[in-house]
Length: 137
Image 1 (tube, rainbow, N blue to C red):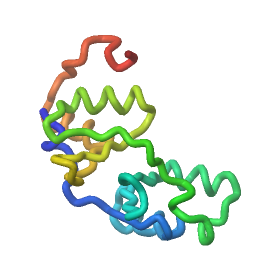
Image 2 (cartoon, helix red, strand yellow):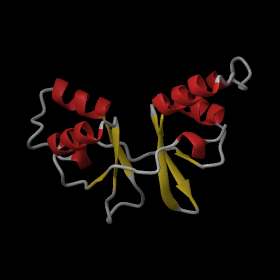
Image 3 (cartoon, rainbow, N blue to C red):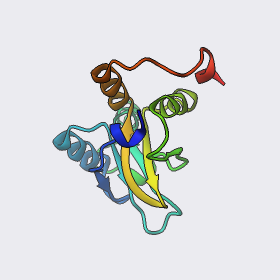
């Protein structure tokens, strides 16, 4: 099974000047765990996740004043729609993250979460094709 079969093609996007409360509210309304941050001044997209927001609030930051740009991840691993779900899952485990931005021909194509992968595997009854220990490499 490939990334294109599990990814969401509808991606929540947010600007870097929004507050983390804005991001949290948008993610809550859309029932998603991450938003792609598009900044015309940045070399590429970033991602803000529920984990980023939790860290900021847990550290005592004011969600109404802190900007998304201060809490996003900009050093992303991008997936291709033709990657296998096993390859995507291995990349997530190696990188310690739960969302992959999917790019096709240099354009934003979707987003894939660990939850999406588990959903695909449980609906499909698929078994893992990654050799033991491959996710640790």
